[in-house]
Length: 204
Image (tube, rainbow, N blue to C red; front, side, top):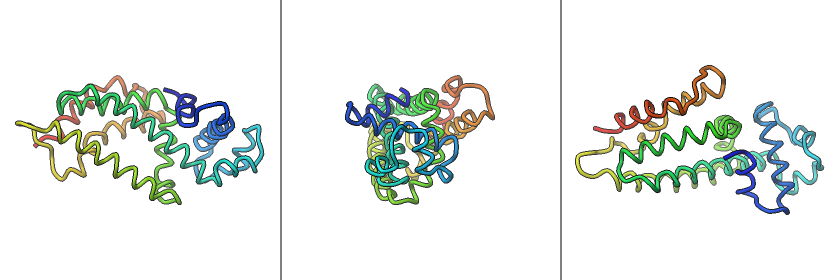
């Protein structure tokens, strides 16, 4: 998992090489300059292409931002689905969610930094409906998977809407601190602690 694989998976083939180049350089700009400060000219300065070509492929800065954002989200989701496919219990599913999340962040720190800062602009921008629809679909799928495991003596906390925040919240907080350099230990070093904490938090 790296920035090249994520872009190649999203935009495969030689014909999409320019798109990948634009997006790779845009990712660098967004992370270095910030979403608001990044301009089409700043992206062009790092690409061997024209402003016209950038607009042709993505329309505007918001188009570039959303293309990167959804590519990262899809890659993160696919990694989670692969991990969950091997779960046989609710506890295993929770451990898979934590492990998948931490592994993805550590393997893709540039993408993780970008996701954290880009979520709000995308949620408020012209692609907000697409993001909302994707979130609803992914939420329903995860809910069905977890409820399928929650049988017998183990019951999931209610309301269900808070469940994913309970599971991921502490891990996300630590990953943000790690990416910013406020803590040094790799998130993967504490996967057991985060997973156990998440497991205890969702039971009642």
